[in-house]
Length: 426
Image (cartoon, rainbow, N blue to C red; front, top):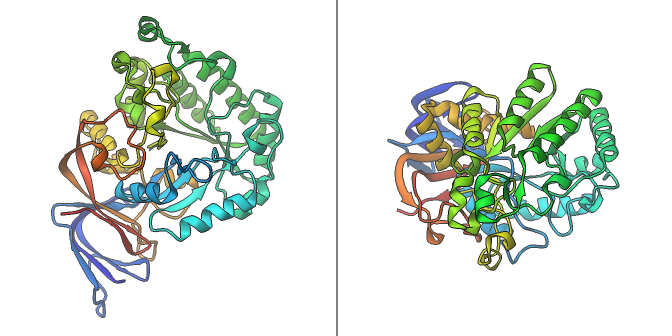
């Protein structure tokens, strides 16, 4: 299909382009920006007047729930939801059932995803067999099968020697490890930030120390091995300070935060709403404000949705007994825009956090608008207002803390590989 996108405000963080321009697409690629080729005849023309045209969003953590958890969500439903959120590339963690610890499982997931409309799917392989934290997986074989990095996701890793061996292996072959720092012993049994609110509500706490102790170990091992580390879903101001220092010392470290943690804090738990049961937990206001500032000054490299659809029955129970997680692929863009408006951050810099920067962390082509590059684009209305309800979300999991909340900013079209994979109903 040949597509002509006309009169849109084209914003590309990689090239720092911000102008009203036309984009011409053919054979899955961007063939021109500005003036179209003389022999170009569009099959479809999209009038983007008053809309933003930007690179397709790149999400670093989207649980697609297959294989093994189809009762929570299906590959079809979550790929559609991601496209509805403007996401054209996503990384999926390995905590499926069975975990993504063998090449055959990775290849099966990629084959299924390729045959469905929606974003490009990049599996993150299991760092240890069955995510049990004991024996390393065959990372080289998993890389050949299509894994972009390796992680334990939220599965515990209590043996520091195993972590050291994983870093040595990764450093030797140039693999990237994605680690969410949490000391399992310090966090055991906790469901909320260990602070005044959890004490008042009678909820078992997870101290900030659980994150910083684990992070200190990770950073020290990274210094020793030279491994390339991505720190996933940081949640405390102390962790952010440690990452700043590590970057200043030249460590090959990047980090992200979940979009929920940019806007919510432990104070929101007063309602006992189980949709607020998240991993890592919502921290103090000081932590939340530190995250917001670190995104502005560049200390945090990327924002992600940490999309975790959960069966409704697992949320309709007391807070401490509920399954953690929130759906987020369709809220990544509006929550990013909300933060940018509140912090006075230019739109280009905000979009950088969910397009170009995460594509660099994932190590894939995408997150930019380049002539000759993939035609992966998000076209959205920056001012469109809507209410988050189960009916306005395409995800099978409508477990989000933002239910019934107003949002501003909505995707109108998502173009993936030159095809219109999502078009908002008029």
